[in-house]
Image (cartoon, rainbow, N blue to C red):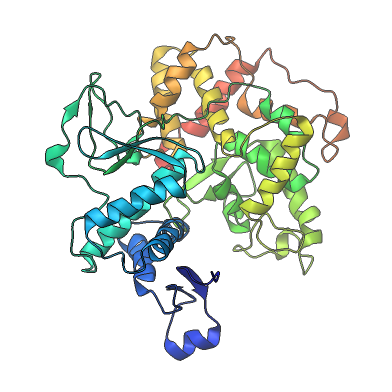
Length: 442
């Protein structure tokens, strides 16, 4: 079967865009004809659901393979088929393509306790994407039946044995008083117990940083651990983001869902700021096609670039991250640096008086820009069960200790160990400075 016999995204040449007034990318069906519903769905997610374009594209990329499966399995069945028919095909797709176990629930819908080919998180994203696609189709008049991914509320009865443990963003109703509800989704992922991946090792940054061979990747990793930022937020930093904060220990940054708007600040250590200046004027300058230093760079220019001077992407950084992990014998994801930052902060808060602790926790919520303050509760249960030492090294000093064995960083620091004796108060002062300025956080 031809590889083109599928629903897909097609990139158009500038000539075709101009001639027919089309966007840079359109959706095509298996016959090669335009599939305008795909582009309209993408735009609906962006314009009416406040989705990032990249998130909207991910949803679309999850929907298109199902539509291809539908076309190949039953060419006479279009996505506009009756809801029950679509549900049967979704059920078959989950089993055949994703290796899901799909079990009927006594409430009338189906539960998915496991999957062999895909992760349960991927399955949940697929179901969310399909649910949104049919919501869009109904609103725009493309689909005449009820949403195949929705379950009627009259059958969403209370059952003691149904206890989904999921974050609110998953769409499942959280159990209350040891009781749960069958949610309004036809397919329910019920065994995906959500919790942040907690990182408890204070020396994790030190262990990981020595695995990098480039100053650029060391700096990105240091900023991740010191700021608690998302990888995309760090990689998206521009010269102007740092320049507006006088090239010191902070920079403006985007936040998840903010588009290109700089709505938050990231903070890091003074030594990281020092090495960032050196990176811009030395290593980065060698990668710049025009060998520009700090003073010649425009505000819109990305801080971190590839060897060819192009914006540094997550995929490119992730290769170096994995290589560093392999060199030092660790298995850690970049996002876990964010969990490490929160965990270490909460460890420190536990040793504070109750009034300071509550204020610090609220400041942490503001600094992390958590839309749902309950997110911190997922960490609480873990932190409070830990038998951890009363004194923890300050977050920044923990991260800075990772440079001691790095060839790219000062040889004078080799073998030095952080001074732990005065760290608790120093850590509290720094976190207070970082976190107390909550009026600047969204």
